Amino acid sequence: MTNCDGPGCGDALQNLYLFIDHEMDDASCEEIRAHIDGCSECLSEYDLERLVKSLVSRSCGEVAPEPLRQKVLSSIRQVQVEIADGIRVTRTTITETRIIE
Image (cartoon, rainbow, N blue to C red; front, side):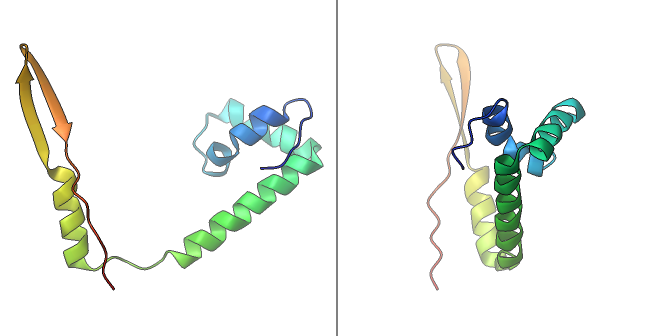
């Protein structure tokens, strides 16, 4: 991120990824959009982050092989349930999965 330190820059830059991914309420989006439209440094940062996101998205278009997908899903689904002092504790255990090329 840049060293932009104008009024509202900190909030705009801190929430930039949420803004880019449309994961904010409309009012917050409007505030950030208005700030970016009026701040050239934040606009440059916004453009850079959108470009990086686009490049990463295009580069990550491959689908994992089915055996790898199943192994990862199986690891995620491993759940251990314990009773400790009358309180049920659920833990999800994810085992290490290595991709060997």
